[in-house]
Length: 303
Image (tube, rainbow, N blue to C red):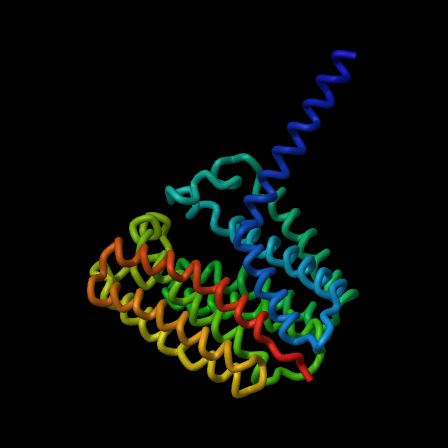
């Protein structure tokens, strides 16, 4: 009886260990953000009635593919992650799981997610998901060690999920209004992650990653790039209204949100310090969910 109890406890500990490893390898919070943007794209591409089952299938498949891409990213970056304070405790650098095991997990969950999208959404969505996985794992990941243009490539990867969601429901050509959320995500990511790269500059240097902040100790170049990206986002609310994606209320709300974010960036331009960069980074964390909530709240059914 005691031996059976011990075996059950041991099995439970093993399962818990691998579950936590898979959770961290998948970068669950980042994957959840990807799912949220994909789901928002699905809702925006829907008509008066949203197919809840289709939305769930799309979000589940997207989550699985995102988990696969994030895991492969860590498999390829294990040596670099071991040199950085913010990543050295991840499952692979800490030795809690082997690279081979992680690669097998990534392959299986990625294949399952792509298959789910192909069967329950459509081949367009599945193909876009698979292409995005390849772009993230096999282009963006090695590029991080070569050139700071990796941030722009990574922004493309992050902008695709809402388009995937839109294709999953529409299964047709890309319309102008379907590009509003991907465009907002593209420029938001550049602002968000460049602020993060500036805050973690020394860590990225230790890890061997080539970020814009690597050759910008003063922060002035980074600050001006952030400001330019915010200015690009200013007309998106008006375009969403003009192109029939949302009501006029969203145009007003989006303008207020982007103006607020731009003011935060301006403070970083005038005073490029860690304090102003952190304030701007936290502001960007609030901006995206507020923008997506406004899009969904004020959306007009896709005709």
